[in-house]
Amino acid sequence: MIIALGWVFSLYYQSSSVLFFAVVFAVGMNIVSYWYSDKIVLKLAGARPAHIQTDTVLIQIVETLSITAGLPMPKVYVVDDPAPNAFATGRDKEHAVVCATTGLLAILDKTELEGVMAHELSHIGNRDILLSTVVVVLAGFVSILSHMFLRGAGWGGGRDREGGSGGILLVIGIVLAILTPLAATLIQLAVSRKREFLADASGALLTRYPEGLARALQKISANGAPLMKANQATAHLFIANPFGGAVKKLSWVQTLFLTHPPMQERVDALIGKQ
Image (tube, rainbow, N blue to C red; front, top):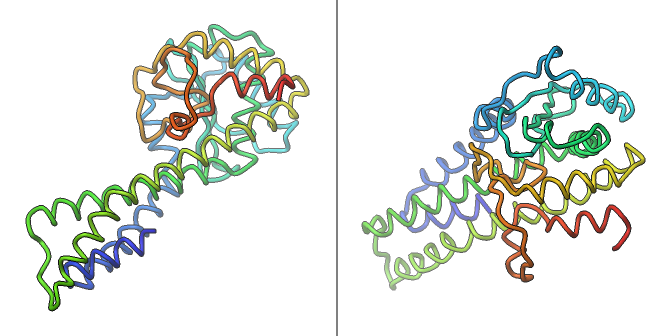
């Protein structure tokens, strides 16, 4: 997608440097996101390292579940936020992070918290944390390229070509610039929804008690409070939509634009109603 978009732009502007810039920028963005994705996400979320004196239960649960799952002990972080939520990030299982909000720790009992942490550790075991980063970079980079092209086209950045081909390329470029970011975003959201279902199932297998995670999801959904530092770029990393909102029935089309599957569908899958 990125190469095709850059190629069309380079044809319109009649400059191979546009494609060269697109490739170099894409490689640079992926290198940065691979090595520093966890630090970027933690900074955006406003997370702090968990302390054994104050976050004892959380650290013990993560340690026990990590041993059970055969995973290295990830770093444990906490976000001081009353909204209940959690996420995992990092580039691989050796450099992974799990994080919970103080709001989550306040409303869940130990069994429910185990279900949530098992879900997040499953994201690590299933390599979802790296996949999510790659998809974010894809969607974000395509949007940046498209925005640059639309701005350039609006100012007449292209050159006319013989036979009116410049006008045709302009139309093709504008269509791609509008539709490609939408396609990339839909890919990002679709991947996120499917991996959430997989992490729910893997987490339930890890704890052998799916009702714990199901109850936790119900409590999180019932709370519905948004995170103070909710960010669209990292929304899909959380166990629930960080922007909160009332629970309501959605149409099939509306579900395409969700970062998470409807909570009731996840609960039903865990307790065997689907």
